[in-house]
Image 1 (spheres, one colour):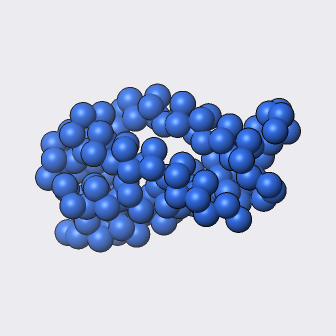
Image 2: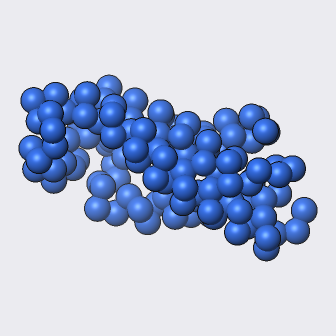
Length: 130
């Protein structure tokens, strides 16, 4: 495993964390993540010696730590930028503890997006020449 690559690519998540709290609303956030995933997949394909899917998966898991930490720490700002999150929170199992719910959901979202980035990385490994 190339941990330097995993941590380095996760810095995109660290950069996106404050942007998603203060500038980028959730409605358009996927448009910003798509290029990040493409760049990370390319970097994994170029620099990893194998286990491309796992590299992509772990990058997203570390990204979820950065993102969820920012969303929890700057909860009020995040909710102001994403008012639809209040309605979604009311439908969740613990509506009176939205930060705790965010923390629990971070693992699920990290894993889901990890599968996507893992697949991107695996596919990129078949396309990109080292």
